[in-house]
Structures are given as C-alpha cells and as structure tokens.
Image 1 (cartoon, one colour):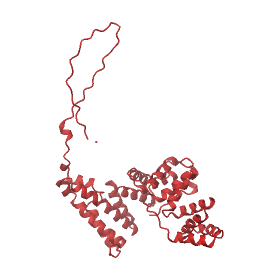
Image 2 (spheres, rainbow, N blue to C red):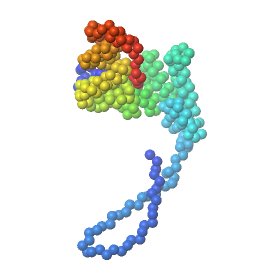
Image 3 (spheres, rainbow, N blue to C red):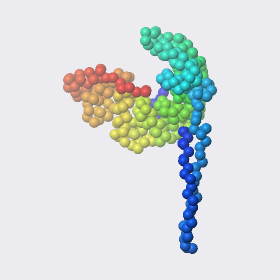
Image 4 (cartoon, helix red, strand yellow):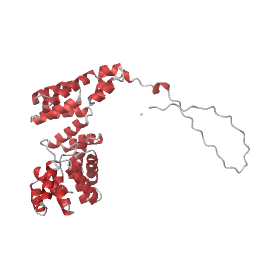
Length: 341
C-alpha cells in the first residue's frame, strides 16, 4: 500500500500479595493525662487477610478456545514456550503450531526462497490453511496477498479478523485500508491505527502521526503528530525518521533543533530514504563537506531524485579526480542500514 510521507503544503496546519502477618495487639496501658493534654490516638488499620484461594490460579483450566485466542498472534518461538506451560496448553495450541508450518511455507512460496519457486497462489493457499487454524500472522499475510491481487474486500476481511483478535499488524493494515477505501473511512481508520500504535506497531504510529498532522479523521494536532513520528522513528521506521527531522527543522510539534534535525535526517538517509539522502547531501554541501555530500547526492540520484544530480555535478567540478573516484567508490560500496521500513 502506498504511503505518503510528509503532508503536502496545503495540510500544514496483577499477583496478589501475601496477607500481612498480624501480630497480637498489645494490651493498652492506662495513662494519666493532664487535663490540658491534646494528644489523640489515631485508629490502627488492620489489613484484611487475602483468601488463600485467590493466590492460586490454575491456568490449565482455561477453555481451549480462550487459550487459542490469547495466543493467536504468537510467533513460533512464543508458541513453543507457551506449549511447555502444561499439557492442557500444549494440546490447546496444537493447531496454532501447525499454522506456523503453513506460514513458513507460505512465505517461501511468496518470496521464492529456499529453492522454492515463487508462486502467489500456493502462498495464499498456505496462508489460508494457517489462518483456518487461528493464526493472525497467517490472516495478515493472506490479506496482503489478496490486496496485491486487487481483491481488496477479501483482504480487508482477513485484516479485520486479525485485528479483532488483537494483532497489531492486522489493526494497522485495516486502518490503512479504511484510509485508502473509496470512499475513505478516516474515523474507523483512526480507531484501528490508535490500537496498533499503542501496541508499538511503528507503521501504525507513523500513519497515526500523518492523520494527526493532516487533520484527517481527527482534529489536527502537530504536537501529537510529532510525538507519534518520534516514537516510530525511535522504533526504526525510516519514513518517521524523515518526518521527525522535518518537525525539528521547522519547529512543528517539536522544539526547533538543528542538531536533532540533522541527526534524524542522517539516520533516514543511512537507511535508504532517498529524499533524506538528498536533504542530507545538501546539508553536507552547505557545511563544506564536499566529498561526503557527493556520496549522498549520488545515492539519491540513483534512487530517482533527479534534482540531486544537478547539485552533485556542480560539486564534482570542484573536486580533484582522486576525490571524485573515491566518492563514487563509496557510493558503489554503500549498503543500507537495517530498518523496519
């Protein structure tokens, strides 16, 4: 699903505690008070003993469907750990463990990995089998394939099932789907994006920030928008890094800070954001770092930022042949730092 980055100019606007032990109350002593004495005795609080039955929780007695619902969004390592709790949990999670096998095969077919030729139909078949066993991970993947196949209503159906089971990725995708629908449904989009954002889904945090920035489905609020951009940026979301930099640069929702703006712009650039590479290259140029500027401008040019080529060519004329060759070699050997995109 295509995403916008920065709003266009027109939008700038429990563990119960053990009961406290109770010591026998000492017998009161008789005191002779002077008639003028104003001393008073405060009432003593006696804690109520906690019934022993409330200290013991037999989680193995939970119904199988409740256990499966709780673990619907678990990854395979978490499912394996949960399955060791007790025999009841192991049995209840059997279908979800099976689902992980189908998710594994689905990803192999989807991406053509491990000697398997890419095949979206077989990938979808595997994801649907995983989804039928209750895995929200499989539901989201099935929804993604339906979306790619332009069967958006079917995709939204699977996003909604995953979202209602508490899967943050499903909630995020459902929210974005509502934004992209014709007509759009920003009110419901905000509801699901917020649920995913508070669950620390960085993509949802970024999208929620955009909606707050643009006043889409919610009253515009630059401070709240910048808060979500920053949270997503700290979680490794590249687009949010770029927007966070702009917030610091323009003082929109964040206190104006050139060092912070430069830091986040470089982080985005080093993770492959072409606009950030262009902007960071311009910043280096203005600071006299010609060779470094050429590297970032060359990367931006290769990524499609045509305007970066003009500035790069101007700088190249000022460099020695050796410096030019070194800059181009650095660009050729450049590798993007990992991110959550």
